[in-house]
Picture 1: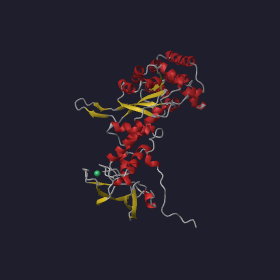
Picture 2: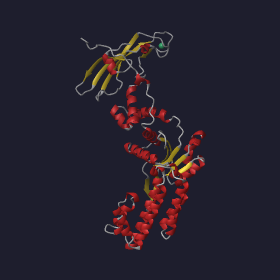
Picture 3: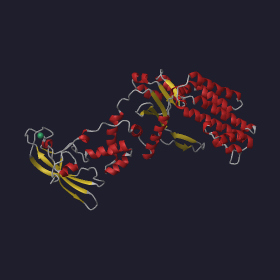
Picture 4: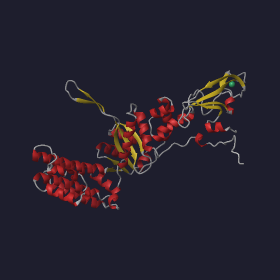
Length: 458
Ligand SMILES: [Zn+2]
């Protein structure tokens, strides 16, 4: 079918532009008639009819033109059905771009959905821009997102499990006791693809071992068998879930959290020693206070002046030596973790990691008068196998943490979520955006001849 230039530019299949006018406020009024063969067929019996009953003007909402609102006025024909046996007396025309009873064009709906799914704006924002209601934009987004999200996840070799707070915790003051009680503290357990491109694989509400096991139980046995390494934070709950559902998988703890624990321990020792020495908390002017930022730094990142300052300050008295012992313990633990291939360039033998961990335990045992070090050594020994697995395999939960940031951002953009299902959908789309896209719809790829007046070659 040959179309005129205005209709080609307007670009709604089945509508022919008869007249267009730009208003003073930028709004473009577009008058169109139906130019679609099937529109003349009765939807009940299929008889093609050319008997006009009446003409009606409908105003389906359409996409903007170069930022300006478009006021589409479609002159529809209500036809009489040609068949005498047909129960339907009359019917109005419709085209696929504006299905029957729809007051919004399909492309406006698609645009709103794509803006939420692809650009990460909220359905409320997309609805405001498109001039439609929130439920319509939300429904369009769900229709675009769900088919992609419902695809079965491909096998993953390295699985990450992490918890994510679903909203602010709510507290209430108990009038009688004067204490706060937790009303709601909502969590999601999230599952991540750490070595592939699938981003966030899924979420379940809650953060107990049963919650995590529930999600893993939904996967096929073949999928579960393919998981080689699971990365978790130092959290016994998820360890229990993995042991139950993925007995063949190795477990790696995230080494960032191991180092964080050691740094926190060194800080705890410093605070306790300073309080013991001065009878108050540390403050600016105390020598120990002056080096507190040097103590959290990695040894290899200290300048020689910084290192000398630590040694001079802490070598002076018993309190300082306690702090120094805790700092050395932290560095000894880091020595073991630094054997990972990411730092050295080659996978270490397991023996070497165990040797360095032994050296850390030995140091803690020599300083067993420092309770914080004893408890750190206990925790590390409890997680020793998982730490060694992390050093040997190099699997970290860093991807989970970065995707958690995206999840938090979505919640901020939305000013919080009431509906956990909407939250899960939005977060999953955000975390897989750029990885997994819906297949382009058929209407996006059509070509149409541009006819009408051609430029004069002479
Ligand atoms: Zn009919």
